[in-house]
Length: 154
Image (tube, rainbow, N blue to C red; front, side):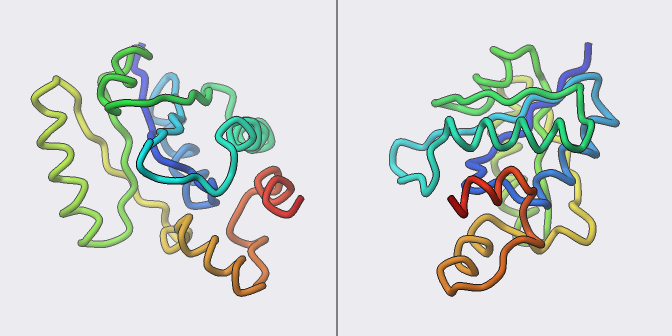
């Protein structure tokens, strides 16, 4: 079975992230969305709550060949532990490509292939952008799935 592993902090999970999961779910037999925990980075939203919101977002979009996991440590290790040898990464621009390609070269040593996808018209939506808009008091509902909106606005 070909399993894709899509990792990120997803703090919060956006419609751009959701678009990549949709695409990956059509390419791979199974997709694992991995919420990576960086001990050096403080999360804005509880990882367990975000996991539930992402799961609800996937169900709402009828993405039934995906699950969400929380992991610590190297992404390539989490991918392998979940039976995947393919990392799914999103690209918005040339800067993303250069950054992601460095990581891909590192992961090559561990027999992990990197698959790049574009979030199409949602590619400009990042977690940081959503968070900054929220801090300014701006409407963020067009950038995040409804279950994530409920989590953020509660």
